[in-house]
Amino acid sequence: MGIFDRNGNDRTKDGPKVKTGPNAGLSRAKNADGRWREKRDDAGKPRK
Image (cartoon, rainbow, N blue to C red; front, side):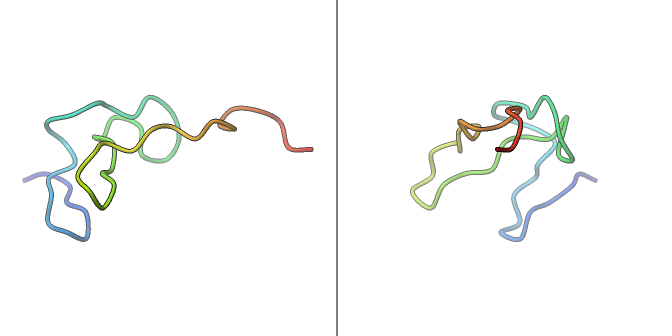
């Protein structure tokens, strides 16, 4: 049994894996049009 998102998609198989953060090891989320979400461009940078 995997971990599922609110749409019923299994987050433990398929697709690119999240490397860091609270969702590390899970598959990336998808956009509304079905593309894999990209990592935020400000991730890992210190706050101003």
